[in-house]
Amino acid sequence: MRFAWMRSKEGPEQSPALSSAERFVFVAYNVVWWVPVFLAVVGILSWRAGSLGFLGVTVFRAVANVYRNNVLPVAAGQRFPLRSP
Image 1 (tube, rainbow, N blue to C red):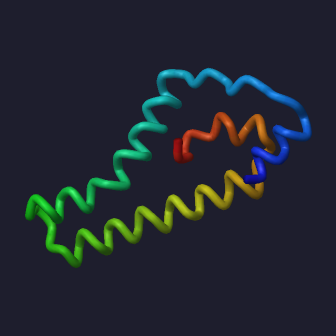
Image 2: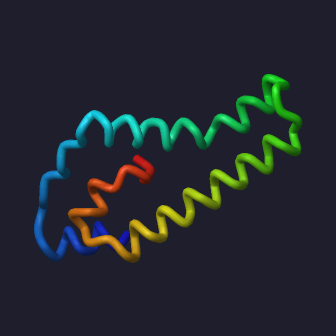
């Protein structure tokens, strides 16, 4: 929300191109969120362990999003690899 408001104040801007390493971290960050659920469904983890793993990853994502939205400037926030699409 903050970035949309700041972009409307500053004018339209192209989002920066991500390097291959940044793109890999971006994709891995979004895939890892579902790994505990997948492992619980398949039966490799118990449902309790899968739920706790999913909770841990979700808390980490929440902290990363709070940091991105409230601390980083717009340009750095657009390049921050730990973000949702």
